[in-house]
Length: 260
Image (cartoon, rainbow, N blue to C red; front, side, top):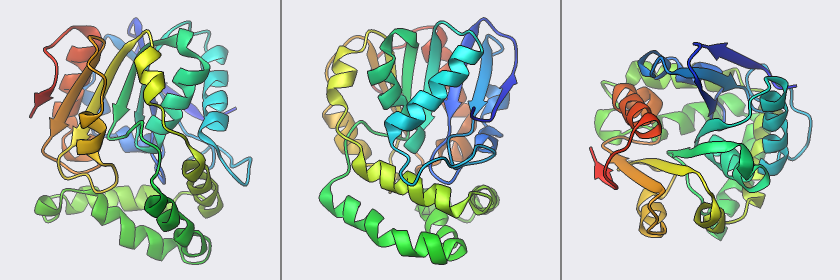
């Protein structure tokens, strides 16, 4: 069973899935701003945080099946599922495997688009450094996830993200990278999902192609999208705005495609 933590006792169950080299601590700045109407379930994905790595390749589908075990253990019928980056990929796999369990799906600085070949090759080249020089990999990579125009004022948050990444098991991280390479395009899942779909993106996101993600979204009434003036780490860069969107959008309704 994956490690998880629960806060709040609201009627709406919001499950948070962190990204690559993160764990449930990554929500520290976002969570205080979430509505009291939510019960928040923060899950550590396999190979991250306090959850063990149980495979040489952690596919998104395998991780989604571990997540559903937590949902079943808690006897939750329907949930709001929000995934950051890799957590979004796991959320899409969850939507494909267990669509009946979703009230809403939020891609939080994530995408339904599979890796292009150059991105896959970039990930393959990272295998050795993740295995043999993980600290260097973290130090080199984490700062690039933040808005380059605000790195000076975000230094504390960058260091916070680094500390979380340093605590990640490097073999768990390696298994997750291998799983991300294998993932497939999930646009059809969005088209066919009978649940609210929320997409929150960053203008300066170097990890996810926000423009391409939003450009190819189907024009459906159940899909809403937002673009924020930040990088890939909205939960650290713009926690109040992100929480306001989540609260309003999952509990109420707003016009489509807003830019902040």
